[in-house]
Image (cartoon, rainbow, N blue to C red; front, top):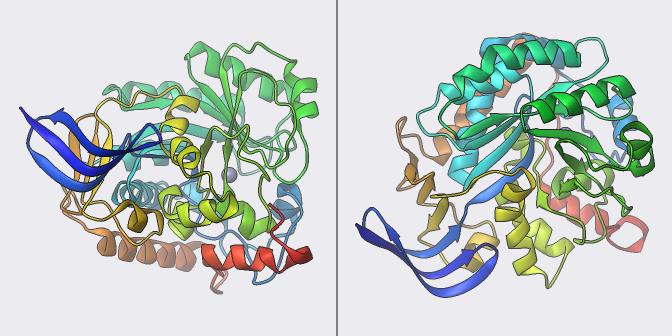
Length: 391
Ligand SMILES: [Zn+2]
């Protein structure tokens, strides 16, 4: 038995000096974060968001209908081998950036297969996407897939819920049935909600005011509106800034954060500089939501989860430092900046991701290259609109 010690720690969002806690060996770091970061929304198969420089959308439905994708998303999803490797790469990147809990939407079998292929894994909430649209599975099809796969996840680090894409792309009966599916498994129903236009009223029309039989996690929730009790909000500031040049104007009502497209723009741990600019002076609340907040939204355990750096908290917050040690459920997932098991470091995982995106574009693309913006420049671009940031 030993101790983990650090000069500074963030414990459940609170910044403390001189941290010391029992651990199975003696370890000393400059900064420790307990638990690690939670990325409450990620599409692990998105290799192209259909973006264009200076194009701004007003809401998610407009984006879905008018974006120009360079890659056939349905073809990527049905390529189980490729979409599993994309998921595995997204989970590896998450760990190396300090994310110990991920909530992954998209194709369930690919996410589960990618996750099981790894020796080092973050905790995972798998939320298979349901849409009543061609190329996507219905709630009935997702139920069959869940039954087929849930037996593979017995180590307590992962659970399966369901993700209704949105109120505009799923029939009310599908949304109600998905909530029952989540309830039967004592799990979560996730959904995109109020991504550019208010939808709380529509949610109440479909599901009533609650109490609901299962926890609902709304993602994006950009509008400030009264969400029924029992609905949590995971905000996605980086992708909101990229798509809409605005995000939720307040931290009030936000339970956690999500990155949306980890393969393209990194995880929530890399968006802290942006989030701190959007909500100045609110550091401890931001740290709370970016770590334990996401765990609580998804009712996830966090015992034995932490992230440690040989760098100051300032460097971590500025995005200048990556963790040297990441522990998930008491087991080292990253040691000396490398994944336990594969031994890959951050640079290697980023090259794997670049190669996978290239492979996806070659196999399922139209021959042109997608545009991938830099998160920081999107904040600068939002400042140029209407005389100030629209958040
Ligand atoms: Zn999303």
